[in-house]
Length: 193
Image 1 (cartoon, helix red, strand yellow):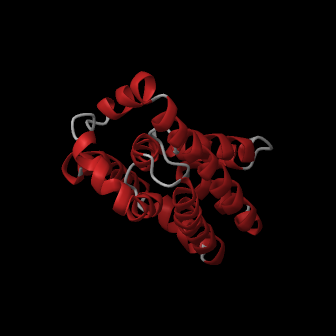
Image 2 (cartoon, helix red, strand yellow; image 1 turned 60 degrees about the horizontal axis):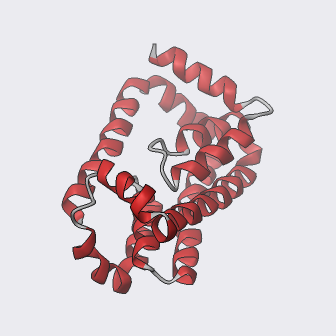
């Protein structure tokens, strides 16, 4: 089953709609969607390695635009939309405790979440809800998301065939590791804030 899903994703990554899909997933992941764009980015770069730079740019720009949606949810729709999303991730109660600290140090938090598997969308909503300086938020988001997506894309471009072989030979292990990191990021939210 996992092999078929992998093969399907690899074939999707080479279609003419893949880039729009990558942009859409990158956009929604930054504000509310739980699946990271790497799920599409990795097979797309492996399928067409010479487009690594283009895919990294698409991923970064769409992700930062999506982060602005998360910021807007926090700033303008916190009670109607932001609170339920934060409650879903288990962070509604800790909001007041974090708000003061966050306005001083939030840029570092956004940078950390932008680069790591930590759920970035939680901090985009926090940023808007607490009123983190928008310029700081945008600059740190561009740096963090750019660093993440350009590094992943470049490494896949540079070392594509061995990485592709490694992924295909260790698909089960890598899927398990990915799920542990994804779930671990959500669990970490409960203990970081």
